[in-house]
Length: 543
Image 1: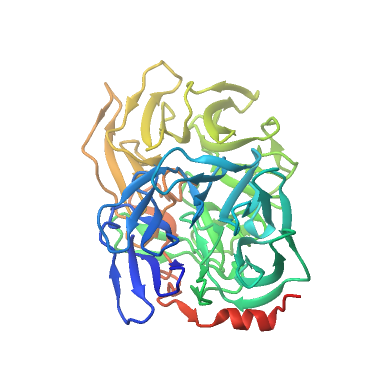
Image 2: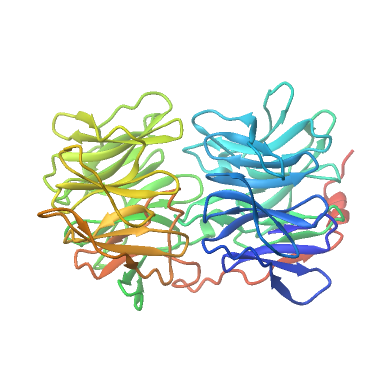
């Protein structure tokens, strides 16, 4: 959502396209050229209000489009942008793993204007008036955005200065304020452009502003609010706190016609993984400050049980006998893999010891119980490795960057994701050097329980299933739709697989789209406050 600089128009995303609404009118219209098939995000107006820049999920690029419609023009490649803004100096955007980049609206190679560390993520950039400094949000990769910082960095010295400790989506307002989001509340504090410093304490000014939610159920730093230079505030109403944002988990029939919500308390759930016997599901739950793993008995005989305590824990993977769960945790300061008995008894056992600024994430456990497949994340690249669990011996699985992998049910094959745009390959295990390209682009591959199908995420609203035969030779069938009615998935280039199949092959457990199960309704209106700058000056005086 964004407003034109003069406040006369509002643009927003709905139904995977851009809509334009004149503030003086009653109807919105689709902007021709924005229907690109795989979703658009982060729209922003040009300084003159006649064009838009936005990110395209279809080809992972930043594009430009006239508000009157037409052909969208590619500006540059952008794998995972985290916020975009556009002023007379150009377009700036956050880029996962790289920092803050700037590019000409006419296209070209983006330049890094604010780099981040290997364990940091930056988002929501804004060039401050005069073009001498950039304002943005930054956080540690393993932390929630409400533990992030809002910082300013002069382009000359490159010395970052923290303005707010705890918050995200900072925006400079012409009234001399810094406005930012903490949970679902907007706060304001006086900000001096000359000294690049805040003064006084933050004051809550708007409660109930929605934060952007990814397909994995995780709330990002982006808050849905926008203001014009004429003093109008627009925002998308939402919960007051991040813990109020429910993502549910549900049991879906394979054809998508039947949905049964799991009996879980409200919360943010993601990365469900079903035990081999189909009796339990392990998943991530976040309260906005910490991520933990929980286990739920699908028969509904008892309430979900918290499985991990202390630190952030992610990516649960069941052992084939259902007796243990492997997971990633930062409980001891690094991003290592641990395992613990599935009933929660005993203490967690460390399986790996990653180097500094390196993360280890469990992916899949082979049927024999002896081999664990995991990914090694370093400098925004991921490679796959296997471990013999008994003696902790590890070996690289190939020599190319790869991620999101799964053993076949018989443990003789591995499916994994590579590249951008994503492709999925099969390899024998143990390795022979052979590899086979699945005839469908996409990511987040997983196998059917019989090992005769591979299911993959092919975009914001689509999944595909491909029949596969591995004996006497590898062959693939024609890709077909795998219904995703009422179910959401993260982008194939980001996040982890957000679905798992039951042993019967006819049901999956996944995350429902907002409102499809819990009754919560996605906001159908945007709140607009005219002359908001006057109210801001009264509530937060600038000396």
